Image (cartoon, rainbow, N blue to C red; front, top):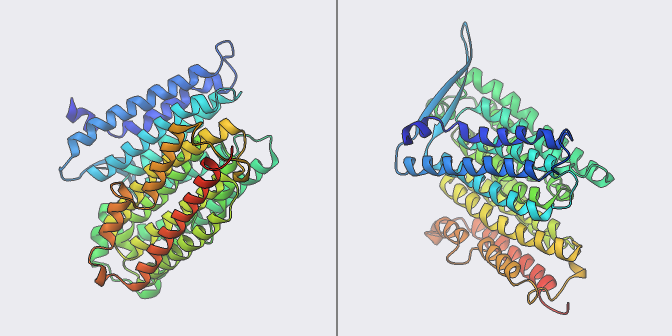
Length: 442
């Protein structure tokens, strides 16, 4: 049974898609007598199935060598377009993280959006969202990953513009879509070029090819810059950083996913492409510069925000900036640790923020205060999430930073300064939010 579920791991992303399809009778208004909640239950059920299936696979792959499933899509003459799926502890673990966060966000949305007339449509879009991100997690094909990134861009547009009757929401959805498209077009050029140069678009094959590839510095640099364009836009890095701030116009349960696994999907693709990017020192330098500028700049901007969701969204860009620095320095293991630790901590923070917003009916930090005694569970969730963000023992970010700074004397001084500055500014921002929301006069 376990072996069958292992070979059928490609079903896991399809569960979310099936859930989205099952919501159609309610989201299109065909069924009205029952209200929209059955649609939510169908989608929740499929996410639970995805979680159970993923748990079995994750247990089976623990400490096992990676396996690959190959699905031939188009075969004609010399053309062979195939979709490869990687079954490994890392890929299945990433897919399981997506399922867990999606399940929590959907349970959360049942209460947060209880009175929203378009609840069924929201859950359908969440299923669509989940399917795309889960597919990216286990994809071992750059072609398949590119297609799923396009699906992710579309679902982001639909979820950011969920409350489409509001002018600001329409503007935010449009800006998010167009910003991501700017990054996707160069990536497509890179995909086409790479298929010609390497003869394969499977990540495992690209890694082998990169070990012996001899490209001219100009070709390697242009290829690397094209490949990092989409992850830069997806992860809201400078100069494509403003869309994530505007995307906070969407419903908060979608913001939970957007600030954890959606931005993480772009960084995950960057990590998978690292062997190819390493062919050009210029590309690595660009990643480091973009990551450092975004990490420090976004941390400073976050301190100036009075909207609670925007204050946290800028810290997301800052955290992903550290992931870019790690990839630029060829430290993939640290990048993965940072990515997973950030997802869990930021999920807690956005859930606590949603609880605050739905209770106080405001997102303005200057209008809050004294909530710690009235909302102890929310206060605890916020503190745990904040501790995870600023690398306090024993939470995940601490171990990532510890590994990064292991052998302190061998780490470049500029990196130590950037890490200390970003960590200090993040702590200041989260302490400021805590003081304005939970402490003081109600």
